[in-house]
Image 1 (cartoon, rainbow, N blue to C red):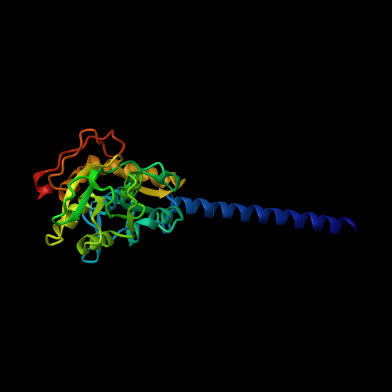
Image 2: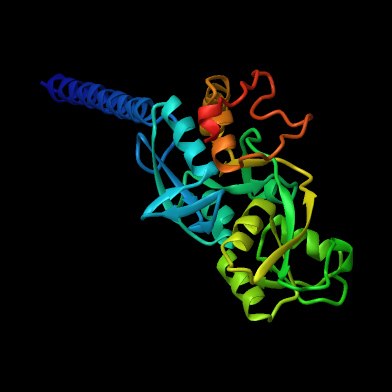
Length: 287
C-alpha cells in the first residue's frame, strides 16, 4: 500500500518536469521568433527610428513638414535596401549621440563626423560623405580666414566638430544648441564669426538677405557617418550593406548632385566600404 503514494509522487514529478521543459521550449521559441522578427534590435520591428535636426540645410532639415536633406534622403534609400521604413524625430545635436546610445533612437542622422571621442559613446557605420568647415561672418566683416579668429567672439553649435576645432585653437567659443542660434547671433552682430559645416554655412548666407557672408572654407579631417548604439553590430553591418548598394545603383551620386551641385568630390574620398565603384551622376540627376 505504501508504494502507491510514492508512485504517485514520482508520476507528479515527471509531469512537472515535462511541463517545465515544455515551458522552457515555448520561451525559447518566443525568443527565436522575436529575433527573427526584429534582427536589428529596433525600437519597433521594421521601423528605423532616426534622430535628426530640423534646421541644417542642405544636410538635414524640415521642408513642408517633412524631414529631408542629403543625409536623410540617403538614409531612406539605405533603409529601403534592407527592408526598413524610417521614422525621423527632431532633436538637438548636443543630445543626439547620447540619445542614440540610450536607445531613444535606433540611428543618428545629422552629418556626424567620426571622431575618436565620439566612438566612446556610439558606433559608426562606414563614411557616406565628406565635408568642409565654413567660416561665416557678418556682411562687411574684416575677417577673411580661420587664422584671424584669436580674440574674436566665435559662435559654434555645442558638441560639433566645429566646437572641437575652435576649442583646439584656444578660441573659447560661444556655444549654442542649434544652427538657428548661431545664425541669429551673426545677424544681430553679437558674434564676429560662426564656424559651421560649410554647406550649411553657405545656405545660411545665401538665405540671409545679404546679412551674412562666407569668409573661408577648410576641409574637414574625417568623413560623416550614421551613428548606432554601442554593440549593435547587426544594424551597423546592415546599414553598411545598404549604403554600398545605393552607391552601386547611382542613388548616392544622384543625391550628391541634387544637394551639392557643383561641389567637387576629393579624389581620395571613397564612400561606403570603398570597394564599390561610384557611378557619375547623370545630367538629369543634377538638375
